[in-house]
Length: 313
Length: 187
Ligand code: SF4
Ligand code: SF4
Image (cartoon, rainbow over all chains, first blue to last red; front, side, top):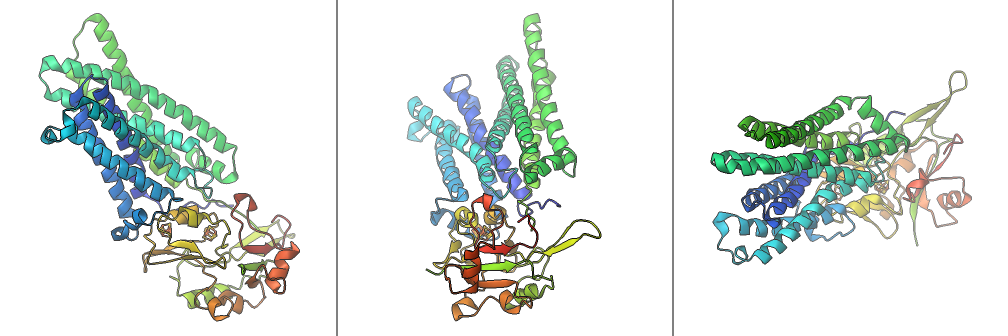
């Protein structure tokens, strides 16, 4: 029987899932730089970028509605059984706490009372990060609860989206870090090169975890219900092969670039060599951008592989 | 308590499509492929000369445990007291979550009204006036038998109780109220 694929969710929802995943994770990494006291100046642009990503993602979701002007009904009707409603609650929590946290970090809002209190900022950052994790996980749950699409109906899907969200979030912080580093005088730049090395290592590890979850997810589905295995076949051998391979290429190449940078940096440190701008900024930028594009392609490919339940008389 | 449902006798369906036309006229559907409240796909089993053709009328199953209703964030998708699953177009924001949540491919987006739509069993336009749905009234083979599944005196109720009519994919836990009398053994 010809597989019937869902056709109502396209690029806008892919962008929403991607930006939600990346934005939520970026907040977590940004708060790490604040809470660990390693570089508070990275937390501010990180938190702001994270907020912008999630708000932009929510805008894409609203744009995908047939009646965008009535989006508020999804909030005020309080249909607690719906993951769209639950998602609006999670997004609202993230935006509120993320904005409070970002305000305390940004130079223009230093007049807010909590900006001076480290304890208050720590608590706000922690809450915003927890909501960030919820946003990232929720994008996977939204699809994972649907029995009508057996390929999506798996606990591995939220896990895959969390791993991909974290990888793209770390990559986004990598870009912010590189841009911050480039703006600094040369003697300060070395600090940012150090953060870049840390972020590169994390990204490579998380992409490794993402690949492991992906392999497990595909293996289980390959031998799962007919609809799920035909979705996997479409990706590995069929019409989705190109977008699936593009996703793999982008993410793996990005991770390879970053882990190469990590090893080059380590070798340079041991040999006492200086870091060139190419090695410390351009390479990680390239790697980070590749991982981010890969994250978007993953969401799009998974949506396109939404084979619906089948039955015959 | 009334529990509206429909029995579909696959042994009698000849795939004439009169039900589709009747539904399209009655409910003014968009008249487009993939945007119909009911449709009749053809399945072929075996190979020449031992071929069996089955026409399988499809529509919303009016599930007792409808995933389309539990995923709806606005309450637009709801169930009436007599078990008919409906979409309130004014409340529907068109998130399309219900379209991907329905395992029976029963829903579509009607761009003209910017809402999701699907089979209503002709609830407000016919059933509440004491008539049967347009597809049932039109079918020349008496394939579609609408009625109260809990009423032992109705034809639908008797067939439902007989065990002859079966739900599609019971493993999904949706408890459909549209039941099929199979033509081949696999159902
Ligand atoms: S068949 Fe689909 S649309 Fe109809 S009640 Fe069941 S889940 Fe809802
Ligand atoms: S598309 Fe309309 S009916 Fe369907 S879940 Fe969204 S709001 Fe509810």
